[in-house]
Image 1 (cartoon, helix red, strand yellow):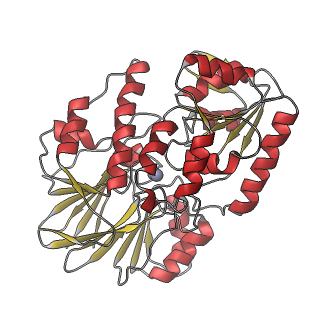
Image 2 (cartoon, protein in one colour):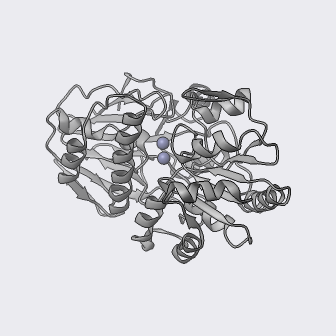
Length: 415
Ligand SMILES: [Zn+2]
Ligand SMILES: [Zn+2]
């Protein structure tokens, strides 16, 4: 009997953490934080034999250093790209907490300890953890992202991580060539809607940004550092409009370009990155404010980072535009702005005059592609995680003849 315990991230988008107890090995799949609330997952209630990290985003990686603080000394497995990118994000998370006056639950030395125990794993290179075989597959979400298959000898359990099937400038799309799956633990961020066609969306964005600049405004494009920043660079350079790139996206792009093989269009990204004006000083930041231009900047959900500086300077002019380009988690300033029209961050609480729009670029699969995926893989059981509407989606899947469950944090499923 294998026990799957959900330590976090089951019925929310944040603090993903799944503990697999095969009876012989205890394997932890991701150990993230909720980047907005800084909430953390439950502690594993057994000694861990291995940690597998699906990808660099902090809602999957953000709490792994605490394991080392608490005495864990075994390995953490992930792809090279994931290690490279999560190092940037983890170190930055300490800085952000310090800036906000929060005391981090772990120190830089615990990140170093995690990295001293890193075990690089390529796609489709099975390794054994005790009696279990573990294989990672490209999840198509961001560079290095993986779905993790655990074959206990009795059951084949796969955790999708965050997954995307449609190719973008960044990723060729997920590899779903695995077979005979007993349990599919699937993310379900967009279990309730379909995404618009990405090419049409990108064309619309370019047209929109030109309109903003033609009316004498500046277009602010908040982006996640990893993935969306590079996609926006490719889409928005070459229009004859100056593009400023600010925040963590600069280092993330440099890191990604060190692994061109994992990118779908490395030359396109390299060219766009070269053309963009990288903001590395406050003088350049002020220069960006004086021009009608495009500003691509972190953080994607407006929680912190350089983008908040630009919003605070530019919100009061209706010629400017703020174009949100990714999922806005409940409780983030980005979500609040979309829901209420107010931008609230630290001491700032304003109703921006500038245009605010949401564009549904997403690095998660949508409902129709999730359904296609389930129909292709035909798992014996589907377990939905990483979503805000997992319960209703499980009901819908059960009505369609699947065996689906939507656990909550703390729940245990036996298979
Ligand atoms: Zn992610
Ligand atoms: Zn995620």
